[in-house]
Length: 263
Length: 263
DNA sequence: ACAAAAGTGTTACAACTACACCCATGG
DNA sequence: CCATGGGTGTAGTTGTAACACTTTTGT
Image (tube, rainbow over all chains, first blue to last red; front, side):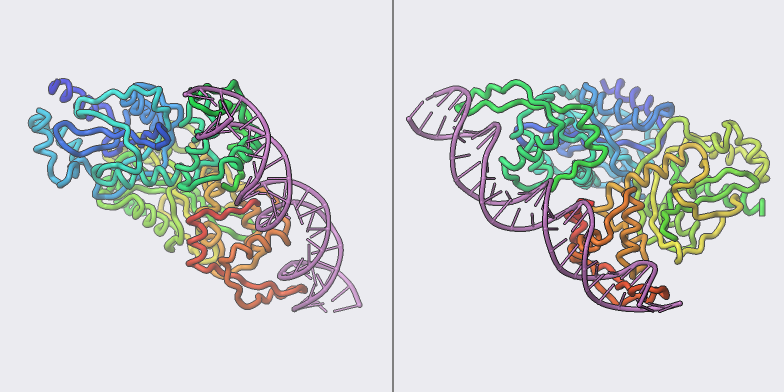
């Protein structure tokens, strides 16, 4: 195990571009909450966003795809870079609560005195932030050797992540909020078929305010890129809502122009 | 001269982060046209966006500021990263029309057989794209030793720039267009005091469509973040328009929410 | 006085808000 | 048949589009 880790890290330091990393805010939507996938370091209390490095013979966007896939086990429907974090102070040597922990960290994971690894991880990092939008129910996150576990946590209740990562999440959310009318955000976060209530809840969370149910419904359906499917059996004592899905062609076209709604 | 160039390039290769560059789309507004600053290589017909590298002890944003300042001679009012170009094929070895020109290029500029420089410039590049918005009338662009001249050229009439740079400009414009209601774009491109016509022309260019003068004026003034100043003497046979400026506080506040206008 | 551009008014129409009402479903 | 949540109707308000009208300025 420890050996495997050393080998795979060594491989990274050989195959990847130095000093340039990717960090992913993997967002999903579950139980009417926007959640992000965070990983817990082995034997520590600190949490981290999943990240990785870019192979020398790999496009940056490909790298992000690969990294998300390696972490969640499934291909993300929607992945987008949103910001470069280029503070001169950022490096893996600043992991955890205190700086200068690289030595003890390497020891803990049985990485010994490998100078190449040490050089690699003590480098200043410029990080490209991506956000991925996935449907939680479809994802089976796998856990890396250096991590103990992972968890979907509501973005409202995130613990302290190391270094700037809480800021990273915040920035990703800002970005998504602004791009809501230009990018297929709801499509990526919702299942193929969904009810108007589900769509509304998502909008409410992303916009941070409550919306009037009846008006929301008419405005959305008025946009004319939804397909009405069969009704959903809720199993509860109320009218069965219709399930809707996106009309790909019309949806994409509308996004191109920007969805001009006042919500 | 050639020696100076060699020294300064050598210095870059020593002081900067390898494989990571910055490219700037410096936009200005003049004669009712949106223009970008492009540089012409010495003795060649090809044009390039201004760019540079990030020093090891420098934030990425600082680097962008410095690079814009080095090129235009003035500090930009507004500078923002908008995209990372991470294609695995991008490198300075692909300069000009054909790949593999690095050797002849180095020879032309009297850089000789300097292996360190050659290594530096043959590396794969990941490029962070920034756009800068400046007021053209205030700028006095200076020209780098490797360039022959620079010019403000309308974004509609750009010549072929090398590699992906026409795409870079296009992407920057898309970005600005989407962010128009969330970022102080017009403030940065216009002089401190401006007329409603000037503002309208700018919007028309950014949005790519014509707007009705009278309605535009009322909608804008209705937003309530403009200050009306003295009238402008146009020197022509017509009514003198008011000069407006931005009420900083109210403008920023409105941008925070997003300016909810249908134009 | 005239041309040109700025600024204001007007009217019809579209969109949005708020709320009321009816409909379907399972207990 | 009632509680619950889905779906539609409507009146009042606000925002927008199109175009006409008035005002100001230099020639």
